[in-house]
Length: 349
Picture 1 (cartoon, helix red, strand yellow):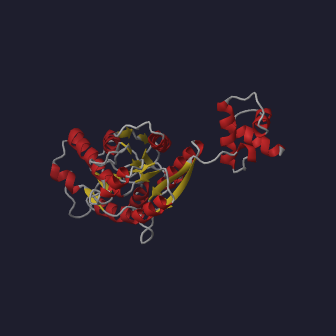
Picture 2 (cartoon, rainbow, N blue to C red):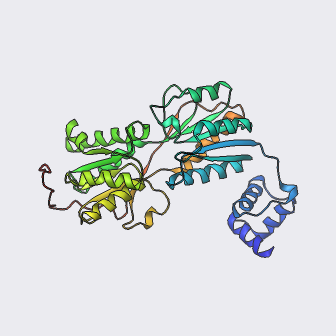
């Protein structure tokens, strides 16, 4: 148990003697320190002693998209950990193409009498979907929180990254590096996040470069999210001679880098690429990716607090909490090339 004591003490940032007092349920430890030790036990995978186990405050559903995009497991991990610290047992529901739908998961969660549900980038983010499904949940009443994808008419807390600010920050960074031919690739237009990024991108191009609406439209390629979609869309922009590409996700940015290399172009020597999310491992790609970081931990904690407040009858404010993205500059962006041979048919600068 000595090695375990040392591990737990290190994780909780307390002494081994304090860990021993908590494990043996002895007095002389503050509530905050006691909780830190118990959390360390949970994080490290050690089972709490029987006398320290408390009855779950209830089940909470967590519905997320497929886990291929590493940003969603990142959200799930923080949300689940924060729920556990609040005494709730998270029930993770992961969607996949052709698999269980969001509505089917909700029915299963309702059968299990969950205390509330957190939706991450669910159907609420799709402007073409029927949002009555959420109104029915609220009418039960069942507390819900919606992460990324604000939509009007749903009287529930929303937690969002400021996607419009992200689009603006990305363009501003490239313009500061001397880029004048800046394109954008993202997913389908029906998603709120895509519309907001486009709004930020458009506003920045018009403000900083005086671009016309038609010039902006000619520099946007919308496709499927993912590496493959990013590669196809970026290839079309590279054919037009862009030197900077703003991407709707990190995975799309990796596809853009692949497209550039397939054309014999260097990133960032010939083309600069910016992602979005700062999902795990983006600092270790080739080249390390410049991206807009979603403040995942802060957003996840806010979502859990809003839900728990609602469950406890404290009435979390029905509004959108906007979290500012952070520009993380790495090695996929650089000063614009002085000259770049344009593909045949590309318009002159």
